[in-house]
Length: 212
Image 1 (cartoon, rainbow, N blue to C red):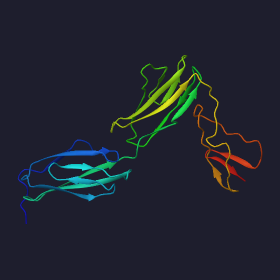
Image 2: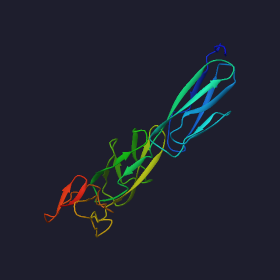
Image 3: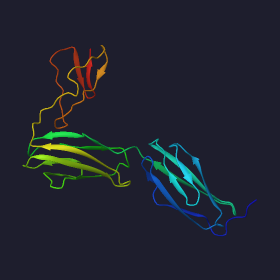
Image 4: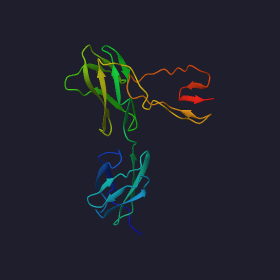
């Protein structure tokens, strides 16, 4: 068999969490320099190259890939895990607020560590670390942004400040089978709604409307 490595094999990665199609580069040292890498666990449908050692995540997210590094000249293996994160999201994507009003934005996916900010060149309002946007007294279009602290991915949403904050259903008429549910989609508004029905055929829950 192979002898033990006189100098331990060491593998370092420039990151261990990536989005879909994210790239990771590796640096290897020690051993005999007869290195190779394989995908021990390939849940994202990733690919990996030899010299340079580069990993590219696949399209399947919310999974972990495991790479195994070996040295053909001595006996040692190093396993390294890469987390492939779900796409970063920001909701709502578009809201309308009167001057001085506020609304909460909710990020999802990614690493779970987010930075919220106003991305407009001339901000009309402000955003706190929890994602709550407060409009100023001016009027116009505001762009807000969430940035993943780990991957650097960014997603933006629009806020119309000083406009009519009335809302509308994305579709004015819906057909739903008896006993089934419906989650209404709103096209504009503040992003914070209360559903009210005027008959006993439809009940309201946190998930939307249900025909009884």
